[in-house]
Image (tube, rainbow, N blue to C red; front, side, top):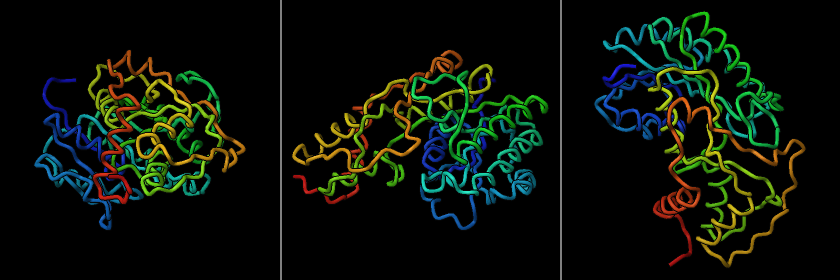
Length: 318
């Protein structure tokens, strides 16, 4: 890759990871092009920046994006990040719409080839592995138990194969669990924090699961590092490389907010396909990019607690 600032396209830019990625890419001095729906209600998460180019584009009609790029940009795109995906919430993990994500993902690969962008990076999920219950490396078998994991895995396999045919550098990043300010309130950590800040007691499983949480700034810096590295090498796991028991994480949060709140673990039964040990082996991404997480779990928790309390949440705390 050259020494001048790189220019990027990011799909899914109004999502949690996408919006943070856009901000860190803009800090490099390069230009960032994003496609958003005309009826998007989340444009406010994107910064106002001279190097951010916002174009209207439908995820289901990517064939029209090429013409819009020709009309609106006069610079070469170096890295194409594809994060857009419909149906990421747990309630939709087995919805048939998961399958509808595969073709648009492939279409972005063909778009990258058409605009002569040689590096394409797609975002996958640990759900592609299924419940292995151990520290997972990229060579471990994949056996997804949801349509979400299956659709992500299908997209991974197809883009890897088509990338070789199109002579593109294709990377696929299997993200484990991220967290941080502005994350969706429906995800576990944010839900627990919201409940405890309100003086309520969240419903919990026994909390015996070991989980790998990666702070959002570390996550997007890893994606940035893959865009800048000498050579992409296929599939990468992205996590912190460390695990904590869910029970311990919840107790850490509770002790900071209000140590007097009683936690009753075991109110919710484990799912039939409950993963009890989710941990990423991050040796490969470290070897290829030099990236390594900088934020400890304690640091990350304190940041999101400060953020949440700063938003004027009713905490009952002095």
